[in-house]
Image 1 (cartoon, protein in one colour):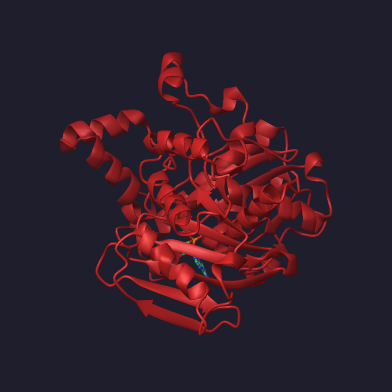
Image 2 (cartoon, protein in one colour):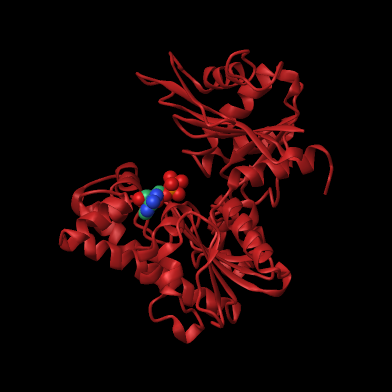
Length: 401
Ligand code: ADP
């Protein structure tokens, strides 16, 4: 069975084409700069050979036409005709309170997703564009939506509510939804698989640390709390997002700087976080390089980043009444041994102790990095949201659940 996984961003489309029965990725790639000058498609064949196509990719539909074109092309493709695609799985950021798991996309589902544009104005519109494009180009192929929010549906109400007038929750759905759910689900399950334990028997904290970052408390296989909230702005310090901040400071800045809600949103989403503190970069590698050269603000940003995560680990251990497994994933979590040390320092009282040598050698691969005999298994598990989307899509389309 061949499944095309699509992740549409505002100006990009990432894709992976799976033959799940054979555990193969037949091709993958990215369309970038949609609607801008210099748009292109970068395609990678199963052999690793890369092909670049430059062209006028004015919208998402044209981008998907390019992808379908190359997948079925005689020279660079891997299928003789588009009929060989059995299903398409889409990453959809916001599933609101409606979707607690992945769903087959029907007209009714599309209507509901249109409604959720209000909740995720930056993310859901491009996701929908991808769905519409596939519907127009290969209408007979079933499509599945896999939501970033779905895994967090198990959060209890006392964890997802904000302490604001209850009427606002009822009226506008203001509550914690959480994001990165597909990643937290994948890495928590995969960690248990590696350890040979049943997820229903352990308390796991997952830290997805990339440009966007979030932590999740996974108790007995279910998300019971997560750091991102109504939007992906809350919680950990991120590349360009502030994470937690006193709302009083927000209104104060808006008053003093005489800015409205749109500019404030740009300030806290795009100019804050690691970039805001260092004034240099949102990329952790550049910040570590700056710190090595003695840049005080880079050093401070690293400390703040690690400290915020440490606090969440403590909070989630308390929320779950303990922790058995701690998982690091995302570009920083998977690759930066220094960050993992910075976070885990002084967490020995929880049973979190890292083997410094194993940790140092662990980069981008599955690895247990805790000390032999330590109470908590600390692990690096590279995330694989695309695989999760492909599996969900196959299960739903072929009713394999
Ligand atoms: P996104 O949220 O955009 O998917 P990623 O998961 O790719 O982001 O993470 C991006 C972050 O990961 C950047 O801060 C980058 O510096 C960091 N990163 C990526 N590779 C490495 C590496 N080899 N060593 C240290 N940090 C890395």
